[in-house]
Image (cartoon, rainbow, N blue to C red; front, side, top):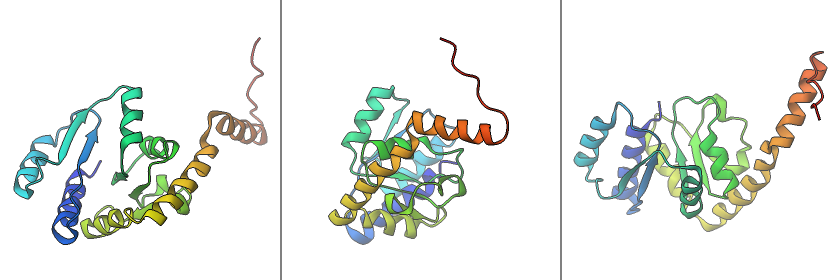
Amino acid sequence: HKNHTVLLLALNLLRKERGIELPLALTGIDFEGRKSLDLLLGALGLREVVHFLGYLPRQELRDIYRSATLLVFPSLFEGFGLPVLEAMSCGVPFAHSAIPSLEVIPEGATLRFSPGSPPEIADTVGRLFDPTLRRSLRTAALLAVEDYRPQVVLGRLQDILAREGCPLPEAVG
């Protein structure tokens, strides 16, 4: 469901059609489809630019975000998409699948693409190299991430529960 195959096809299009050679770091636990991805990497000639980093501790992951040029999140489905929120909080320009769970992210803070279209993903990623757009996305993302601070989210949850007649109990001292 992470849609790595389509992302690799888009990366190949960027390289062949636009001359953009991007290193790609994939994080997270190993998954069942890794062998087929390795075969695709070989067929596309991308072995040297795609790196499987595996699971990373929180600080290392934060360092990866801070050093990243951009984040591409091509998932087919997500509960919410924590990597997108993490990228926003680090000011990383990003693009993601136009899927329902990620529609809550303000449009000006991100670029969206159809997750099944390598050409559309490649085009969207290519747009992320425009310095003016990058600055605009970064600024909007840093503002939008404020809506997801724990205090803000908890306040909204308390308001919703209170309206529904189920307020949270007061914290015990």
